[in-house]
Length: 228
Ligand SMILES: [Zn+2]
Image 1 (tube, rainbow, N blue to C red):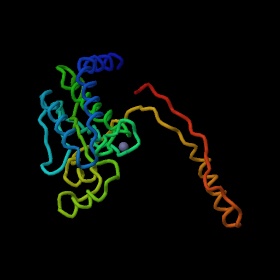
Image 2: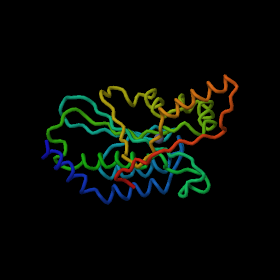
Image 3: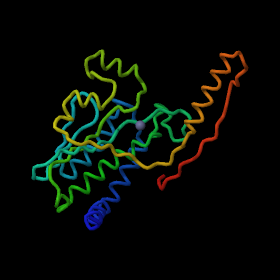
């Protein structure tokens, strides 16, 4: 097992530059749901350069690519989400669109490409069976809903969320297992239980016609992880 992991790690290492360049490109070109045309194009070019045959829906963003081990077995899907958030106050947000990858999807899609790159190495599929489907999926964040409502009205999409739209379009057909690539980014842990307890307390006080504070702050803690 350890040898297999070391072997895989060495394949990833071979693509270090491609992986890091991809992360920077996607970070610097954030696009929101169903508008990720540049991100899609960039990734398609990388996948094709690695020898993958890419299938793209003509009318919306994202794509899929398959890798067959040549042996019967399950179809394992790896997903990376393409879209960014919008956050005007983020220091690195796009000035015009307010888009920024504050949810870390730029790491997801980079990891997706990293997996595809590593698994394209000769011998990488040794000991595996079944097939792998890489899915670069659009529109995960529930924002900019007017635009999506318009796409639905025009009959371009049927669903607001990209994964459901891809399900509808059959891109998950025959998939036995699906995993989303999630980066271990530094996040904030909120005291959810305490928040709920205080909410109940304030409702109770309101019902008893007692004063409740307009603002109430609870301390949050930073969950630091080894990532940028
Ligand atoms: Zn997200």
